[in-house]
Amino acid sequence: MIQGKGLSHSELSEVARRMRRHILKMTHKAKGGHPGGCLSATDLLDVLYMNVLRVDPQNPHWDKRDFFFLSKGHAAPALYAALCERGFFPEEELLTFREAESRLPAYPSCESTPGVDMASGSLGQGLSIANGAALAAKLKGSDQRAFVMLGDGELHEGQVWEAMLTAAHYHLDNVCAIVDYNKLQLDGRLDEVKSLGDLPGKWKAFGWNVLEIDGHDFPQIEKAFAQAQAVKTQPSVIIAHTIKGKGVSFMEDQVDWHAAAPSDAELKIALEELK
Amino acid sequence: MTKIAPRQAYGEELVRLGQENPDIVVLDADVAKASMTYLFKEKFPERFFDLGISESDIVGTGAGFAVAGKIPFINAYANFLLGNGWEQIHISIAYANQNVKIVGHNIGASSGKDGPTHLPFEDIALMRVLPGIMIVEPADAIEMRKAVRAAVQHQGPVYLRVGRLPTPLVTCEEDPFELGKARILREGQDATIIATGAMVAKGLEAAENLASLGISAEVINLHTIKPLDKTTLLRSVRKTGAVVTAEEHTILGGMGSAVAELLVEEYPVPLQRVGVKDRFAVCAPYDELHDVLGLTAETIVKSVQDVICKKRQ
Image (tube, rainbow over all chains, first blue to last red; front, side, top):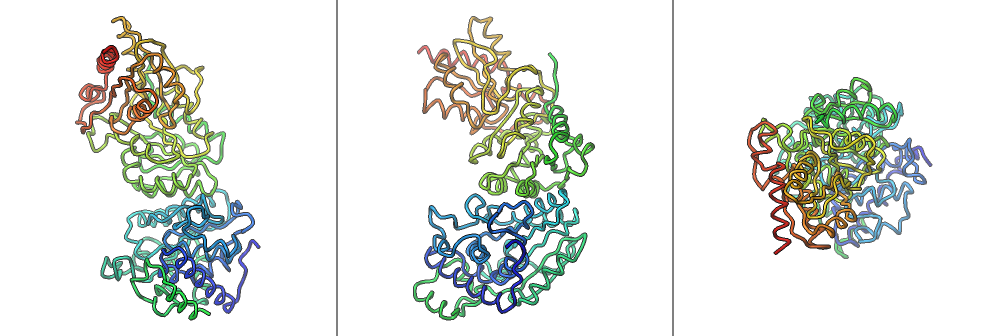
């Protein structure tokens, strides 16, 4: 299937539940990864991959595909869970995450994984890449779109702000950035490490169409993607307020789950909650 | 001797290639006049993108064009492009194996009077450590045209070093050119001079001066610094048993280091590297700065005499 699947909200909810289980099992088996920032991004990636992106799992390099770049590369398990649910590879493969011969490395690699168009993990680079792909699409006269997901802590990187200027200057209305605004980062609360201040105001001042939503509310997420697509001459950013560790009671809003794998006992409790 | 600026040849050839291949796009970081990509901009404005003074962003944007199937040439002054953009080149181009042509301008002493902030003598070293990137520094404007054309044919990332000032023509239109294949410009028996870029002309001048002293030097134009043409280099060194390298770059980590690493593992012989000796430059015109830094035919002559001397001990 090439177009989005057009899932209902209850179907999306079921996919999100399975994605969260995939994420927990992958990080548990690999004894590593970043479950907190995967679980915050899950609902957004769910809607994007099931109902928005025009991609062909049978032909990942299809020349009319929409592009998605996971700039916050540490959420790779969430991306792999979405790609798996969209049909890019079988579920069994998920448990090879982080193994030496696996097609699913710790951070995304376009050389390894079907459906992944760029390497990431070194923060700050994804928006520039989305801009390049979007400019190329416009040059070809194609209606392809470029999506990119950024972490909130990632916005400390200067390159993001260079790329924000570029997207606005070239009127890249086929670029849609998504900020997973979970307000926690490796060293602690984002506001304590380095505050982003008036984040929507900053994007607006840089010339972007700003959509601020609850990143776990399917109707709001779907509406935001539709509004982003409808706006012309301006790039759009969806600032999605999310909860780090969303869906697992003991992980929610806990900085310690930024980069930590669940133990056997923790996995059992978490899977029980996501039954 | 006729002199032409390599950047002139680069800018003109890019226009020809743009005519032939609609997939070529050119990105510049606010130096289009200096890089001469303005020629492409005039001819194909829809395929030219000025990213402003944003070297990290230009690397990522170029990589994005490549993801979407275009052949991007990204242009900036070499030190700013590779200094600011190194991590982006590392991940978004090298690790991601994207077909981006990275073009570093004003290399070496090209803009000598601007001084150390504007003089890239470290760029080869920065690129050499990244797997999969081809590094090319043509000997003159004629070879530059062939190199730009070959870079488009090559599927994968290429780093092209482009000089600003007119340099002597040392190759001919009919000379063959193949990326990765070093060319012997003058045969000799006593020592091998391996040079790249503008130092090739000085290597030839040195060989001429050495001949008058009764020393026969072979001169190799090593236009492709990575991957090294091991076959041609080793064949020559097995014959001569002594080597001098010459480059407009620091002796640390550049072409001379690459040759030294090859030889120390495969066929150790006396070797000296002519280049910038782990120091910062000064503000001086091109020729004067070359004198200050020892990037001269005289230094090459002296170095050849030294390595031959060591060979005989």
